[in-house]
Length: 167
Image: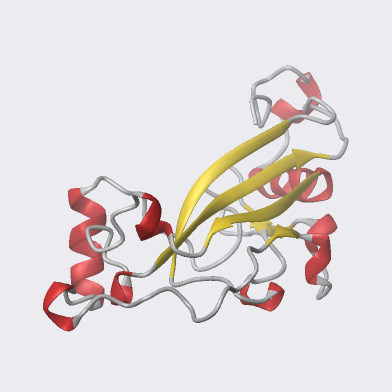
């Protein structure tokens, strides 16, 4: 979001990192939209990204301001992502996204996502057609041990993935 600390509201500029995260947590909402559960078939090189079984999904995280100071009300940011494996059910996506501000170690859960009702934060999951995406034959797969994944992220200059949430 363009105004996450851009100084457009003088009051937000003096907030501590914890208070800024709390303010963002009250005003931001994240939604997930899965475009495809078989991203390899549509051009994503899941093997080079280090995905287990060379299987990955592609979608968007949609971050929206639902109100609040220092942010433009209604502003949306869509962030494309590639996720390992696939998403069959709404509960395959973790609840309670969170935000941190200015490097603070204290996260704030996004209030609009603090729920076990997946329909409040998942927009779309493609229908499952037949079986799940095909796994590559063993000779075409690369080992996807943690060290291999780290190597792939560094080689492709990918950011370290958070365990869950928006950080």
